[in-house]
Image (tube, rainbow, N blue to C red; front, top):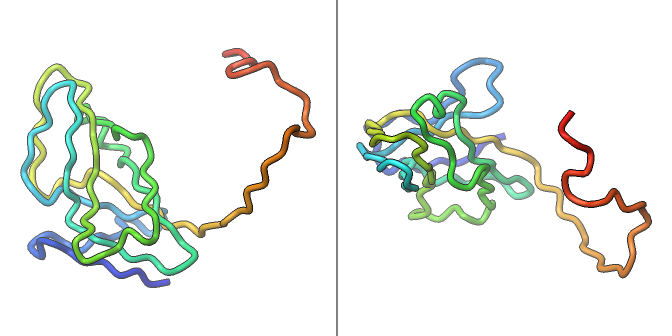
Length: 143
């Protein structure tokens, strides 16, 4: 399968899978940016991506991003297939959990993209479900 990627700054490399076994490809910061302590910052990722019909993308943190004290502000990002115009640059919202500013240099790989098949479902409203109630959120305990 091919996907189309537009780079906004062509001095940065085209995204790539870093190992033969990698499930996702990395994206990097397009700019030098400082993430203030305990705040959310939106970092431009230098790409607009067009995936084929029937697919979507998941944008997530690289495992090493947490070493910087940053985590995705919204956990996992679902990128709908139709967010793919010429000016639809992808961004990565991060929160700084440290007690100091975090400086990100242009080209720092922060996020990764996983392409998945989309399965559209039919939504059917009912008054009752055919299952036994479990008792609420968190009812199985912690051990």
